[in-house]
Image (cartoon, rainbow over all chains, first blue to last red; front, side, top):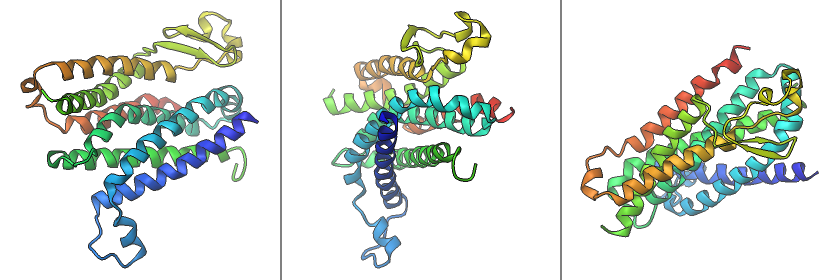
Length: 155
Length: 121
């Protein structure tokens, strides 16, 4: 029961994280020309620096919840996946844990690069770090979703 | 030396070093500690279940290294970050800022390589 509640919380935080980093990445790499009139244009027209603090907090919370749920996964879920020979899925999940850890290490640099007032010499660093985080978060979300559903729908 | 410059050098060195140390920790199995969730114990260093139990019983005490790898990387990164923050700014000024994103990308590629055996089963 505890694991289920924590997993749902982990998923909800991940959704917020996904929204924040996607907004920020698109606003950084493909800023909207003003005034934005389309949905996609408005999606990219957000002030990207304003997402940085929220992203750092959400990332730490999501990682902490994931680290806790991982204990249950290792004991209760992974043996079943190994028994059913879902080795590729386990490999993808291992990559998720590696990428998330590397992201944790990059958080201070990400935060410094987005600190106000934005440093002009860090423009490309900021954009690159944001893109890396977008990849890590999307990968983690999708692989987490696959692992969560693998013994259910579509198995 | 302003605190802003020092914090920037700390954060950037920490990020790049963390990625590098993490890839090394995974590749060389250098976990600071090993977690055995079914037993509720944590042992220092990289400990294999088969070192303490019959291999046939290893599934009863699965070992987790991810926490230990992350701790190893954090220790190495902390040392690198503090060093970068304390050395004169002129020593780090010429370093290419791109290392901050290039090293993590290389580390991620290394992790993909280390994970390949899963896809050959």
